[in-house]
Length: 149
Image (cartoon, rainbow, N blue to C red; front, side, top):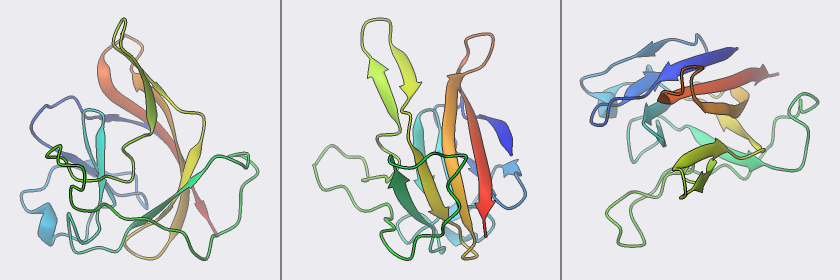
């Protein structure tokens, strides 16, 4: 699946179900098992104990080719955690998915991908394709993901 998620709102999160590709809003995401990823601008959270009742885990993969990768890892999954560096922001596992060019304020996805264990213990490889749509609008995040069996 390749999909553009409109994460342009500066205050409200949008939520993504990796199994169906559905993108939606939630009033109480901390109580919902309907979502895997939450997106707001360039920030992503996962449905793990910090943000919700799920057990979503994420693993960075910067060694293998996205297209050829078809192995479910048995360990090494990380989850969002409480703020540890006193910047007032939780330690999101997706906090370094992009490079930022300060001159011009351009955000570019890094060339690696992630393996996501979703809330239902299904596994997906996921990569960020772009942060801008064809009109140049930021926070129109294009993602590609495929289930790994």
